[in-house]
Image (cartoon, rainbow, N blue to C red; front, side, top):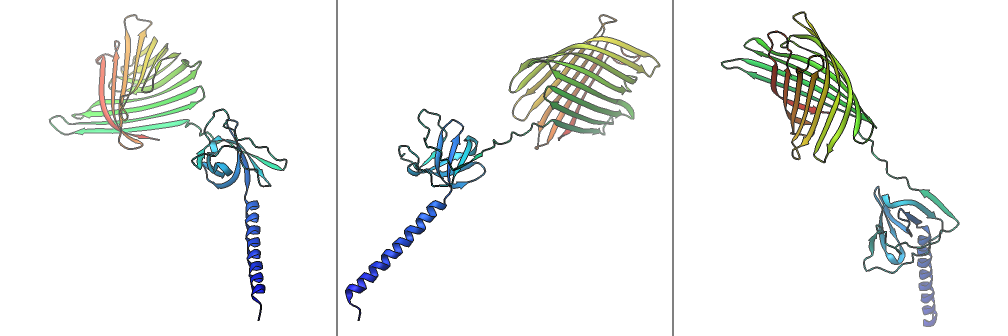
Length: 345
């Protein structure tokens, strides 16, 4: 029979052995934890062990400071230590969770970087590239069977390209209509406008276009002209530009006549966000005939746009063309209003 004193001694030895094993495992776990020093963008440094990390932030255990959440955007460099780093030196806070966003003096947590440190630079998040190409297509029709039967069709397409100081705008439109079997509209036009910024407000442009208009007895016309533009007003919901330039136009008419016109061009361009979903765009062009003073051409184009889905909108198009020197038998004024469904890309 084993004496009670020996049994107590064996039991005490067993308890001591278990305590030693637990302490050894805990110290092994402590050294296995990755220790880091985070260099912040404002010049501060934080040291501790990484608790968790995701695509937007890092959570570290900074000793007396407890757990600190640091956004990745504020980390300029990260030092990984091969030994357990010293605890961060700072006064304890009442809340164990803090966010390193302060630039106040004395906010830096001073630690010395050991010699055996591997430095890993943190790359800033890439800035998304602006979209250079944008395109929109509008399709519309208006069919009416009543005392007077009429059918109207509308198709327009617009593409814009912008890169640094350069902008390119391509426009295409087609209008066709019949009333009581007679053609009331048959027009197709295309234009290209290139803008180049000379400064924040001043830009130069070159405008070219071609097309035909059966109702106006124009079999073919083309025009070209350079000029300068100025950004008069740029607000969050309103933009106003004015342009001054020169225009050369050549028209071949169905009455076998040709009309060549040299004009001074004045253009006004407006874009107004009436409210969050309603946008109005307008362009007014005045061409003063330099060969025959007192004669002119006026072109007004407007679009009222209301989005119904992300890339789908309802549009009302207004076009007014006025010419003091039309072909024989043609009205000086041509005014049209059309509705269409717009698709943006």
